[in-house]
Length: 71
Image (tube, rainbow, N blue to C red; front, top):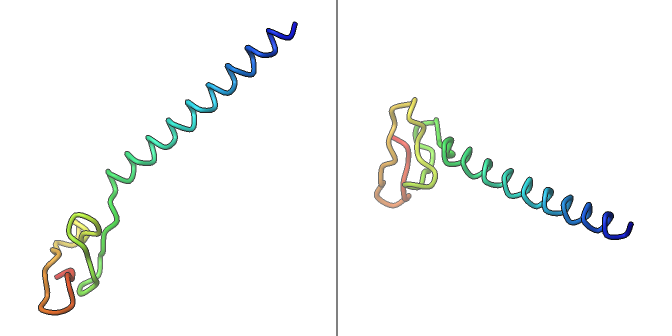
C-alpha cells in the first residue's frame, strides 16, 4: 500500500514541476512577442530593450546628452 502512495506523490510532483516550467516558457514567449515599448514622443528608450512602439512610427534616437529618446 505504501508504494502506491509513494508513486502517486512522485507523479504529482513531476506534474507540478512540468506545469511550472511550461508556464515560465509561455511567459517568456509572450514577453518576446510583446516587448515593452514607448508610445510618447520624447520619452526615454533603450535600443533592443525598451524600443519605441512600432505603431507610432517613432524611432529610438541618440540625443546629445540625454541618452536615447523616441523621436
